[in-house]
Length: 194
Image: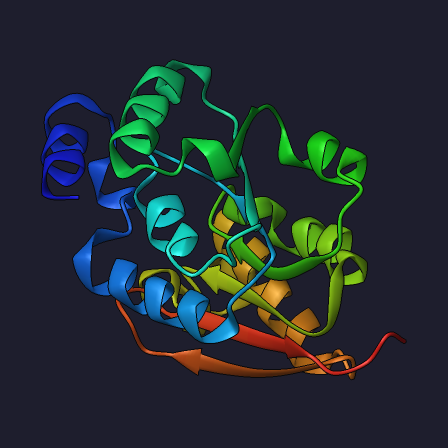
């Protein structure tokens, strides 16, 4: 994990998008607590969070992770192989808005950390694919503090996060809590099918 962190900072544009050690350990712990059979990750980046999430998979479990940047594929596969998770991971290069509807699985855990403008759409796509009692975790919920701005003054990325937060808060199908880890993690537990 140290090497993946270092290589991301040396070779990849916007290395601050990497989950990092603290957030990675939180994701690993949550995954181990949930013990998921199927995980969906939207936004692989260089694979750090995927490796952490995969630690909690059941023996027969599978992680489906979607990354839009095909230039990262070689690096992702290299570190998935080094971490020993290749046999239980499906890396999909593509647009999550197109890929998610084609995945015919029920998920115990969904992790969202991709294009902030599209968070509301990601949520709408995954909520019916999460089993009752399953979880959705979304990163960057504080968005550097921009979510407290006047909506008229926000950019489309901030608006996406604000809309997502509002949708989740008003959705009676889920319970949610925000963990103040790094840039904020929204943890949602699905409580009904409706």
